[in-house]
Length: 138
Image 1 (cartoon, rainbow, N blue to C red):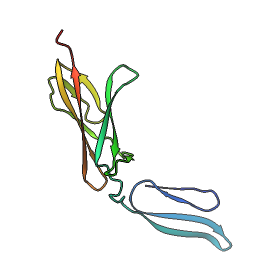
Image 2 (image 1 turned 90 degrees about the vertical axis):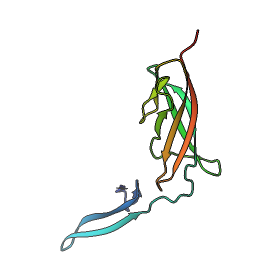
Image 3 (image 1 turned 120 degrees about the vertical axis):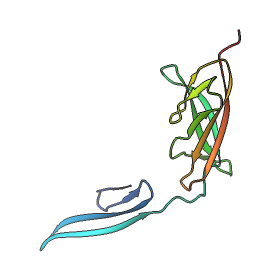
Image 4 (image 1 turned 135 degrees about the vertical axis):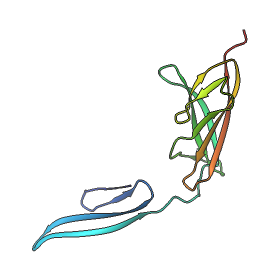
């Protein structure tokens, strides 16, 4: 949840929100000195929350296809995603998609809608869609 640097002064850096206690010890004139601090890393506010997703198709080094999502705020600024969106395909006869990583597997001929749903830390969702065509009628 946090890291603590050990370079002169202790610097606490929050990695995720929540509460924790940090304990430090040092030798003193009459024994060990112990200090404890309670640290609260606040939950992120909804400012800058992801309100929409931009989806792009990418070819992986092994030749497989994957979809990659980037977040946009209501103001149109790029927002870093703190986790992967959940991926689905609207037509499982045309293509399936790995829900966790966006890798698509073509299964038939046609077009399907690829849907990504990202859940913000505050529990709200952002959705993005794109189309994927598989196979050929020729």
